[in-house]
Image 1 (cartoon, rainbow, N blue to C red):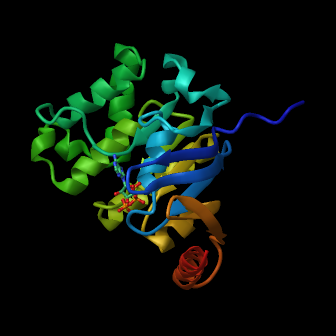
Image 2: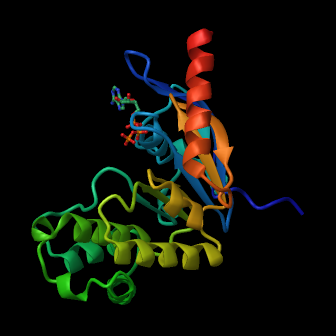
Image 3: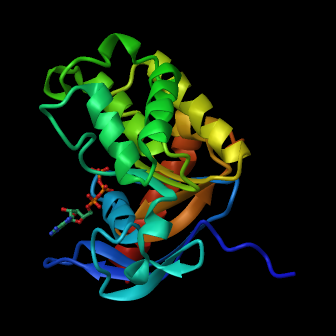
Length: 245
Ligand SMILES: Nc1ncnc2c1ncn2[C@@H]1O[C@H](COP(=O)(O)OP(=O)(O)OP(=O)(O)O)[C@@H](O)[C@H]1O
């Protein structure tokens, strides 16, 4: 029997912007039941990588497969099983949180009844009951991020891609997200997450990949000590090697 397809697999991915920044040949996989974290300095290429993985940006070269399907040819059946939060947390600033969540559920193919149940569940999961009737434009940054995460997760995606999902969350929100992701991973989802919080990442990641100047330059051991030191050692060694070349 062949191994199950990776939730997502990218090979030799390249997207170069004018001036030389971008992603310069990156391989990456997320297996079912795995949390794969990417870490890197500002401008390292994490968001660009995620946008390429989700078909939001076309690569110059290389390819991406989601559950074995080429992302350029992926249809609604594939996208229905993907949940992501990259760029903007919410679609409709003038709608309240509940209506935004309902719209996200319907866009992911849930029927009216399924959507209502999924929205109720995710409102409870992210402790959003007090804010369900508040317009998205009036929510605090952190609550907007909570609603954005809830929208990305409410349809039970098999692949979850989150760009700095804890950037505006309070400690309670960080814990709710961690528990939510771990429940989904236990049920077989694969998670790709970027973060600047090395300690938080280490709590949930099975693998941590360091991105520097658009390349994967090494890994961090999630159970290791002093991740910060190991991170900077890897980044500085890579910078030195590239400037010497
Ligand atoms: N559309 C674009 N056109 C030109 N350059 C771009 C474009 N998008 C991103 N870049 C550049 O590509 C590099 C990588 O940016 P990216 O946003 O992927 O980094 P990041 O690792 O997510 O950074 P941060 O941690 O600050 O969010 C940066 O130098 C950025 O300025």
